[in-house]
Length: 253
Image (cartoon, rainbow, N blue to C red):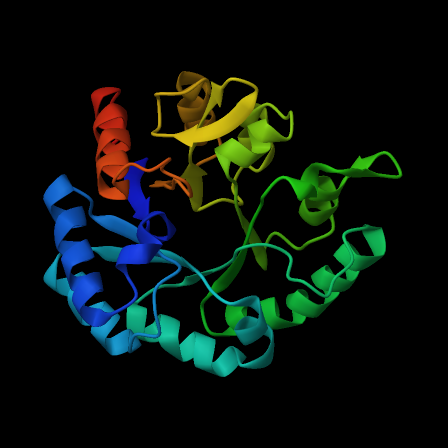
């Protein structure tokens, strides 16, 4: 498994070409070679690709606006062709779909049609979870509905270790249940501050990353994309570097 950086962690530093160039330089200096593009400004995709190539960063997967995926699929495909990226991520079930079985199934139906178009062009749609997908409806987790009522040939997943554990689910077991449906997993640790759950650099919190790493191997997950939505006032590049170093120490490349 390879260690990558999820750009959403440094979203405040990726809103202009100049800021993105500096961010890519810093990521390369840390040692990153793989990235997930997410939360960047309205930057020409040719420029994004050129900067990534300059700093020897491979764009593995994205988070892309779900409205664009649904309503301007051809433009999304073109952008990813420029990136040299086959994996298109959707950050969450978008607003407008009720978070119940009817809403989930409507979402699956709508985006399956998009997923077919992506597959025809050599690409794949991937769903990223937060916590709400682990609410139960009629005795079933919403996430299980997403897993079992989608075609594995069309739908992949971007599981998030923090949010899975936040919802009371064993992260390692969940990753194994997603075997062969995940290219990139979001590595994010959870710690306690009083009664509050907070995000911290990987392997500095309470998640059992020894078990998670083994689970990733079992599930054939290729990339651990480090993401820390909230760095609690710290420099996000420092948080990324600490996560990177911690994972390298235990043999994750």
